Image 1 (cartoon, chains in turn orange, blue):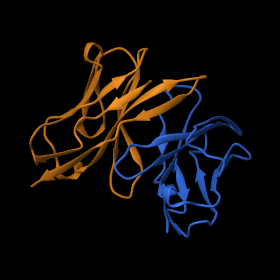
Image 2 (image 1 turned 90 degrees about the vertical axis):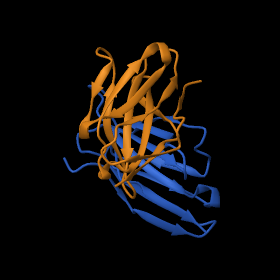
Image 3 (image 1 turned 135 degrees about the vertical axis):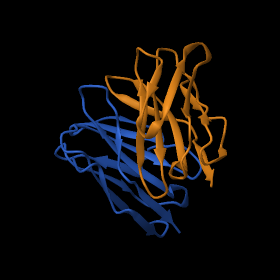
Length: 115
Length: 114
């Protein structure tokens, strides 16, 4: 069955430090992969997506992610974290079934940023 | 583009009552999805519409749940005889048929069943 694993439930970094959030997926075919961010009281905002081509994808707010097929991973990175990045981050795989994209989400990683 | 909107944002109800939530997708989007998110978990797929047709329902959607999208525009999600286990955030998303199928999410409706 398709699944997404985010091994880190909670991560704390200092402002200005680099960040890497891990995501592993289980899916039989080439996946469509997404990272979303959720701030308290708000819906999910799409940070970036991977469909095909270049395995390093750039997103909004200075985030990037790298697709590694051999490791079934799609880790999210940011070189320098800002206090406003504190939020919950969700990795998702999109399933094409009948021509649409149903999202399977991981459990999320909550990011705290120390000043 | 005003984004996906949901109403109400918060709902507190007593066990056994019926509740209805509304979702207004981005105007040109013909696909609409409902997800449920419980505390500490990622969203879980509930159901999907293309225009007014409901094309898939998750087994999470028990008989007490019903969703409609009467004219292919807004959608409603009704829960009958609510139970405490229904307490969650209910998220709506929409997307286009063509293109890369990115889903755009609304702010959600938080349901608390007491």
